Length: 107
Image (cartoon, rainbow, N blue to C red; front, side, top):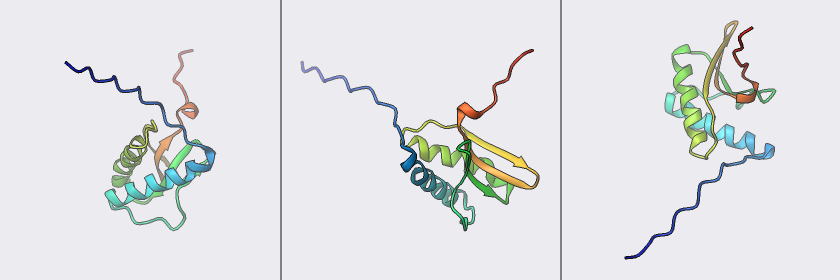
């Protein structure tokens, strides 16, 4: 009986700051194509590295778009959580950097 070697544990993917924009741009583009969001004139939205995604015009597309961005990132072993934020009349969809998300606290 042959014993097959145990596969090595999968290491977490690290993305350098130099590569992050390229990886996010690819995820945003692929998610936009799947959800049929019109292409953006300006590329992905990155606000202080806290919100990453893009501004959408249709609220019905926001959550599916955010989920597709996260799906693309997880294909590259990058963990993220989809997020939609509406400020004034702007719909921001994508994901937040988890460190920057406020933690609920009891006082």
